[in-house]
Length: 331
Image 1 (cartoon, helix red, strand yellow):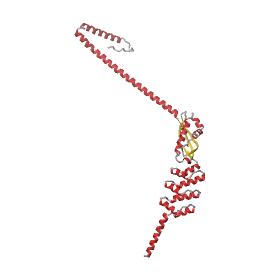
Image 2 (tube, one colour):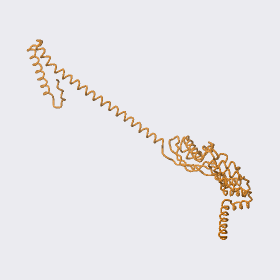
Image 3 (cartoon, helix red, strand yellow):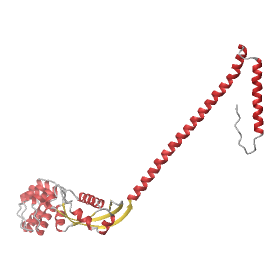
Image 4 (cartoon, helix red, strand yellow):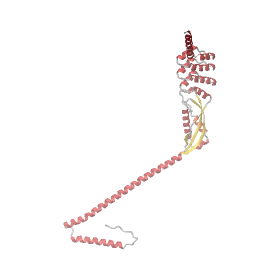
């Protein structure tokens, strides 16, 4: 019975020590004390209670202490609880101190919480970054297209990292400056002969205003001649004018055809009226005979006159030469 109690006590002690050492970071406390960082064991336990990982706070604090910087643990813990990266902030402070860049803890925390990489910003302040723009097409006044590619050397501006525009704005502004400079040139040859005209003009516009970077230089990496846009536009205009003229000609032709058809219809209408009038002649003669206005002898005399006229026309046609144009028969 005593043996079972002893085993139970030993197991209970082992479980207690395991839970104790897992909840109380003794090793981390020893490392901090050996590094000269003043931190209490109960302070580490309080971090556990506040759901803060002690190593995320103590390890950066040890690095700051070794670098000769005094950063309160409360501020580190507050930045951690706010969702910031404590280790990156401390590394940025150490890099800024070594490079002689003025950067305090509050500023670094604000940059980190703004979503920017504060360590990368400090490194970029020391080692400027080169941003390469895509190929930008611009047209000179003579209608020739030029394709230019630029390399923009920028340096991070610590004071404007919070609220400043990013690389996309720099690329867009440089592209706009290139288009404006090439478009204001009288000839594309002037730009090809002096490419640094683009970089000087664009750099003088102050394109880094309101951005998180400071433009150090703009270098034109490549300039190529593209299409003759002016000639292409003239060809397109000529083609459009030709199509317009063709459409107008088709319209006039259609109107002429319609007018011709109208005239043919009018002729047919006149012929119908003539036939109708000719049909009235026998009726009028019959009516005259019935009413006594036309005698029988008068009728036969008229028929003889018509026959005589017909005979004369036949004789006249027979006496005409073979190549003479045939006269239309009179009705």
